[in-house]
Image (cartoon, rainbow, N blue to C red):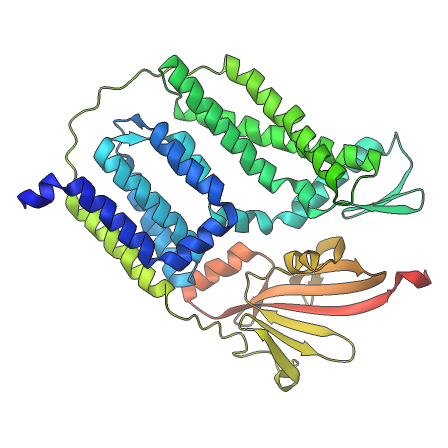
Length: 415
């Protein structure tokens, strides 16, 4: 016991390293999307941590329990990876009594779960931004019409690509904001309150919307919607002008007010931490098991499974004379898959078919128009919300799938 007491920090570090090594595939998956952002957030957590009398360990343990429960039931690597990062923060807090609310927000933003959440809102964000740009420009330039993310100006079609949402700029803006707040705390030798941090985060979100709004306007006016050096340069300039410079200006009037706390005695309870580690280890073992998606279980008899082929273990394709049918795992949102393969989404909306809501998309590629109908399916019921269908999976543990039917409308060359 004396040995454990004298070397508890070294043992904790060794345990963390062993845990990360055991979850190598999950860690690699998580770092693959935002390696720099995640590592920088953890470094900022250590540098910008401050002593607090709040028992943050109970909040972190509660979040880990929740995330690991969902990860275990849904086999979700992104949530398990976030749990591992929170466990690192928990260990650091237990030994130092320091916690950084600013960096904690960055860790959440740079986790792959946020990327997934943002991806599922991709089309809605793009179309909302484009429509507001249309309202602003229609009285100044001759815009014939707008269809989704396509502007028709003097007979020519201008399409706004996915990059114009600025997801990378959104997260980079938060990281810069976190650096500015941390530097200001170090300079003033005081700390921001939680509501001050949330307020500054809301300002960053607003500035990001403004930045993307003017980015799209500039790209349309200059007709630089195709991805090239000028396209990216305009994006970077808008980010600096409408997001970075306003933050640099506002931080001068955004002063921390909380002095250094004198922390009370803190006796670490071992049992909750052992339970937390046990739960993480159990979920880690579950992540190593091969997942059975049961995509074709109780499939509607209208789909002839004998004519289909497996594209991969998460996608089954059935091809007929008049349409293609894709049966996928719910993570394969069609809008992301289609735009990733060069299709342009002209229109996206919910429609009613047989008194059930499904998604309808009109797409174009190589001057050919396509209709795409898709929905999530759990049991015999259709869903249009990813969150809702995953909640059904979480509660009832039934197989879920995404069905996408695609058919050709006509070639735009014959208009």
